[in-house]
Image (cartoon, rainbow, N blue to C red; front, top):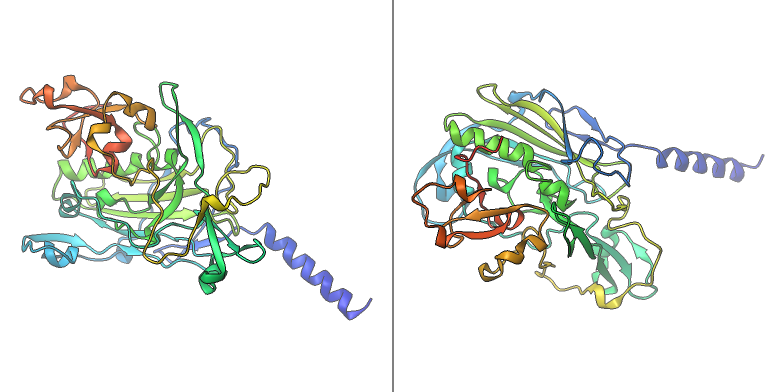
Length: 383
């Protein structure tokens, strides 16, 4: 057997093993988490709300950032407020070799929640997570990696994977939208930043699920508990889970432990969408290969980011948020007082305080309300 032939066999064997490898993501505990294999055509099944509680948090509090006091101006890095606040720094793990986000963790305090109310931080420049785009050479239209694209931007271009799709509301109505959003790992409502290291390309269902599902399940649980108990703080971690070299996370592992011990759980939030076959390897949807549509390409313009009108992060004109809003959301209709300017929303007008002027209550989708930085009223019992 020739030496060259032996070397070829070794290379083939290594490549075969690599194709079955499951990447491990280091966590704040310096342990490892292996991605759980999730079927690409998973339907609601037993996880109709796109999450499952898998046990206690197992959080090591000693590895988290310390809580400290400062001023709102210093903590936010902007504004003029000298109000004293109790906060924690949020740690965003670096992108890995495939430019994928790898996790975020910190301690959530009441002041961090209060500073996030009614405020929607703008995304940094070029925040789109791995799997949002595909990249190509201009000369031959051959697909390349994002790293290759970064090294020769004038000779390459990118195409969005977030093509228009038809989705269905909880009430069965179909509407035109986009499947993917920039989904925060550490929720902005809990003090997380709108940066690439804190986002994955997530489905709308993974981001908000149904009324109590998706990432919202644990985020709202933490927000509600701290709001009702201002002296309580919560250790919070969100780690995306990938299969091999795939650019889209199959799921996100979220752990939360409150200082009073009331919240102590880890949930797995599935990055799936009922009825869609997701291409986790490259992003977008699995479909027959088609010629690149040059009308759908992103030019190499610095300081310019793509925004689609149906993304969760986009701002919606208040005049458009009326009866037809149900057609642009996965969520049920919610109600917001003060001509839509209130920071909280309600699922039923009947549960709103008696002093609310119902003539000034605006209907909108829950997804739109969340996009505006609003949160569900803690005064409304939805159990």
